[in-house]
Image 1 (spheres, rainbow, N blue to C red):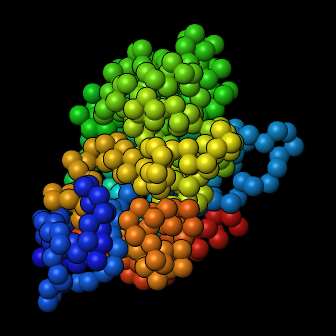
Image 2: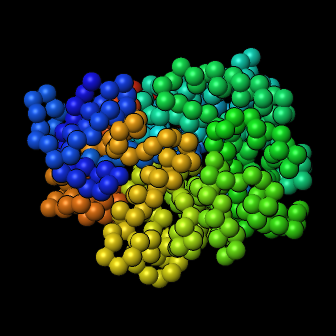
Image 3: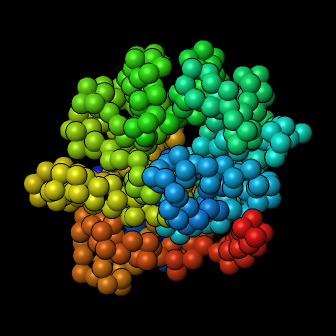
Length: 452
Ligand code: ZN
């Protein structure tokens, strides 16, 4: 058992002073408010809950910054995707483990304590399944275990190159499964994840481009009640192709034809009409927003103001992992809205209310729901995922309450993170993950060989 004491902490009931958190068996066993520190308490100043990155493709961390040269035609998502395919085709299981281990250590250093790994790099270089169909998933699980990050593994079903069951192209061969192969992959994935404390499994039908309606119906039960994540309406080209195929837009199609409810998470949902925006909010599903990746890829801007006014739930994901950080992702979300609406504090809940607090609370709740966790936040029964902030950081000096979150999100970023506990284990201290140097050395060696 460990006892932590914080001078101030953000609890589900709001900011409280003199908070003692009792951690036992990786879980928060008790939270006491208004108690003086006792002998044996480990003392810190400020605590906020760990956040989930609800959408990650770990291997893409390896190509961060490698697709920033303009092509000879308009440089869009689809040219970035070709770079990503070339990268994906070369990586070995060892490479994936090396990249994922660094990524997850970075996530923890920057405020994420759980990851939803939307995992589609399944097979060997020629597209043949490995002897163990979960070979790659096992590497992801090992990276999560080594770094301490909580894992929600979302094996992705990917069968086609475009809408209407079009044949996949050669660059997609490592992603492609039949329904039977995918069922075996799910069984093997559950086995590989089962020894990890606090890990869970869902499914990820990749997108309506990659999965036919019959396949979507066939694989959804394989989630066994776990979360269901799907990419939808990220790009205008995708929306146009979906309309040509079905006379429906992607979100509209899913809401009409799939049992979208609180278990579902629609990743991006960038391009929606006002009607779709209201209907997605009413479904109870989470919108999985990845504002940094969406900006990097030139996707567009999610209708966050309208979605939040309609009572919709959102969480954030690091997706391509080009830049990882809780503060960075939330800041980009708000700044996208400011640029679009030419206003400030768009996602605040009302006059006098902190924008940082509104963003942070919503993303903690949305991430908890989307990764099927019983509770998030610093409360009894939750996994002990806690981030402490450095009150000596210039952008936090003299702040109290919600002004701390505004300082963290809009000014300091991860530079203000001091310690991070993941499942009660202090894996980050003084802003550094305990594996940082080893993980960087191994990652750098991997990347040097991949880009050589
Ligand atoms: Zn994605």
